[in-house]
Length: 587
Image (tube, rainbow, N blue to C red; front, side):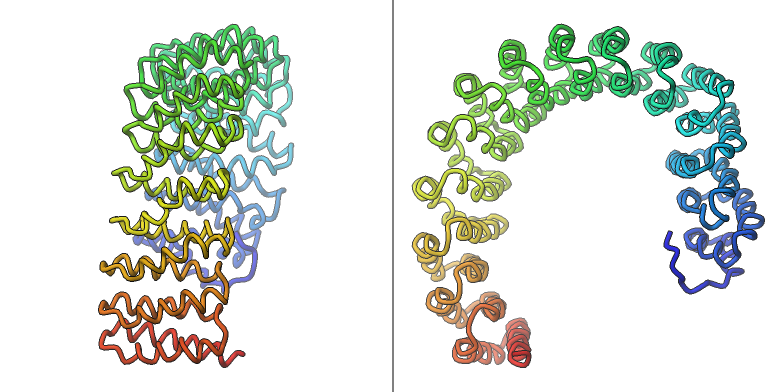
């Protein structure tokens, strides 16, 4: 909370509002707790405000959530670290409420306060709080306790440390699955504070109990613990204790557990090292890529490139590529989409020859996929393949498919292609672009969908920036100006938008000699929408054209439009004239 002086609210009013029936008033008052505390002073805050909050039995979760958040930054208002412990009772109460987000915020605030408290205060106040919560009758207290052990443990004396490890072990065997889930989630954080000698014994015993839990929701959280514990253990201990668990989990009867393994497998490979990865984890990964649940295959497919990077190209070709071929024609479009989003990254891993022989056919089949997202994911990563196989081969093999997509019946696919055209242009070079893609860019200006026409105009601007004004003058401007006579007013409007975007790139001379005359001609268009867009474009020309041109050409055109029968045309023309006057005054 800000410590700057803000108007001090009448404190009595704010305290009364804490008891008000109106939830909004109570919420407002809770958010002003720091103001109340500053007005009361540190001593009265400790003796009056904090006890009042401890007894506050508000039943609205929003108010309780705000209180849990505010108390986390309250140490300065109670007199600093030596008095930090007075904040624990109200937060302890909030740790026992039913609403999860309130408890989580209370635990977060307790961790923030605990991490700043002095060691003696932690032993005297914080550790007893953790023990009380862990022994709580209602499961919510025990759930919250699990998130506090990593703060309490490092400062505890040896006897208390033994007790805390025992209590955590009991929480991992609690009757309530919610408590075991919380213990499983927080095990990594707790383990990071435990001494290495107890890590191999006590913590690994706790971990093994969790991995054999009958609730899949507990086991899947234990998968996350595998990666966290793997980083703490020595490699040989990791292979002895963590590796067998991962292999068993990869064949778990619950697809959710297998899904978590597929998500975490890359991190687990880093923990166990290269050799066990080749012998034990590659077969496990292949099983997950061929899992009968689509969700598991999606998670596994999304890690294909990362996993291939830690293997030799030979192993990737031997074990991973056959699965990739199967996944490229998977019955689930989401699996194919996940694969398409990462498969391009395999090209640098496998090298040029393998990419040409093995990966290119897969890219082509995914580019022709009936599901738009699959095609888009391939297009967006083309540069990764270009770096490996070179532009000539890329253009021969993949470009026909890209041209086909540029005319796709789904407008979102056409839109995505347009957005990647400047990237393709910079990769392919100007000569190649003129031959293959230039005509497409002009064709999009007359698309039936407005978003496509708008993106096409933006695309022309980006191409002009990429290849320079001279190239644009030769290849873009003549065709754009020709379209200004299109019989359909929507296309004429698109051309106005394109002119407005191109003018800053083309510069003063071309704007005045080529673009401005066309805009002035369109000022006499029979459609009012065109005329008021002319006024907008002329206003955008103000920073570009010289003062003499403005007075001779732009202003007379706008003066004429100010008298237009249409109210919108008059409004935008007046706005443009005011902008010109403003520039004249400042200059």
